[in-house]
Image 1 (cartoon, rainbow, N blue to C red):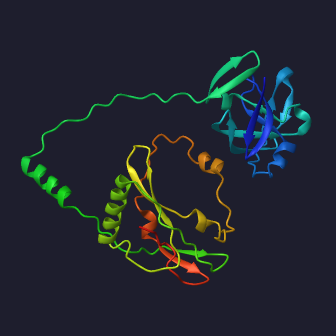
Image 2 (tube, rainbow, N blue to C red; image 1 turned 180 degrees about the vertical axis):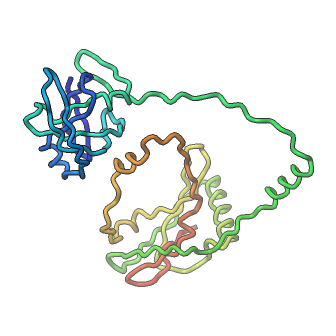
Image 3 (cartoon, rainbow, N blue to C red; image 1 turned 90 degrees about the vertical axis):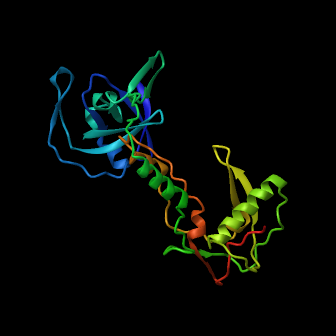
Length: 274
């Protein structure tokens, strides 16, 4: 059965063959992919009717099928040795659960088995508990106004970007005032006068809690974009193969800790209206 797959961002029609122990690719397709480096194995494959096929070489890659990612070793063979561009063999098929219908075969990742774990219970001395509680209550992050990171922003012209203050409900106004006071007390922001000013708004995070944000969309329209190529999301996801533990990092107010340098004139650009 034929199936469209993606290798190195290129879509290719393949044959899913449960009778093949390995995954094969035509030499011409390998060239279209940019000729990834090969391991010259010099192996000879034996196929149906004891036919012999010389392997040009092999390389490791990630095959995307049905939005699922499968790392696999691919053997490159001469063009005349098979009719399909790629044959998906058992070295990939064994990594997936296959659902076969009259007109399609669907690949899915096996569900990772979860084991029940119960918390370990042990007695902590009362004095130790009191010491830990005192540390947690008295802890204050050692925040500094800037870090060693500098962000240089270049704008297309020197026309100031200025917004009128956004009207906020009383409940959101209290949230903004509280956040502004916290940033000011921690030395993250300070009152200033500037020709640039962006609006403040309150958005809700996934857990429903509020977050104070600054609307820089108008400012973004006049920024000179960096020509450095951004990484492809597929390349990033490829690096997550065989990962078992994922976590989310909450970078609270992370942009407030970066020193901003604005070109062509050095000016306080990160200004918000309150």
